[in-house]
Image 1 (cartoon, helix red, strand yellow):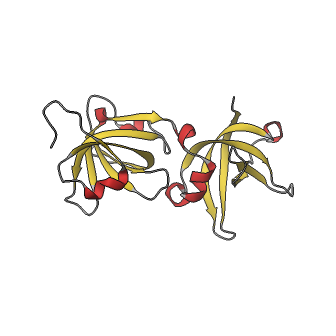
Image 2 (cartoon, helix red, strand yellow):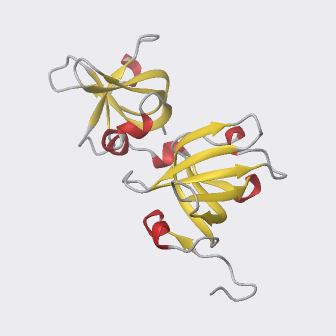
Length: 195
């Protein structure tokens, strides 16, 4: 039982199924989905970094703009809200004032997360850091994790990537899965050197 004046607890997403209906909690997670409704409310889905546990957040309009005005997929968000267990999925109801970005997507998303949780980001526009280089055979351009242990195919059609090869970069693009080859591909829309 929370005492008067005590702050709501911050709970892991994996703990939510065991919590009581109506409990006020803080949750932290990576934004993987966002929908806007004509009513002005918004629905967000947060996931842990492993992509195994998720929670739905319904945001009502507060004095601050709705999250769609200031968040990107892959951002880490901190949400304060009330847990509801009355629907098909556990849901946290929060005012837009109680949703904040704690880390931007390029600080959260990694090549490993996109590779392991690709179904959460397929078709989505993402921002991610990595190393741009050709594979060992020199045939395909890849975005490597910073430790070079994993990679995604990088498709760059609008510009010459040669000045970025072997460098740490910040890339924006759409993650897709080639249905024919079952290869994850990041269709790059912009790229800059990352200091």
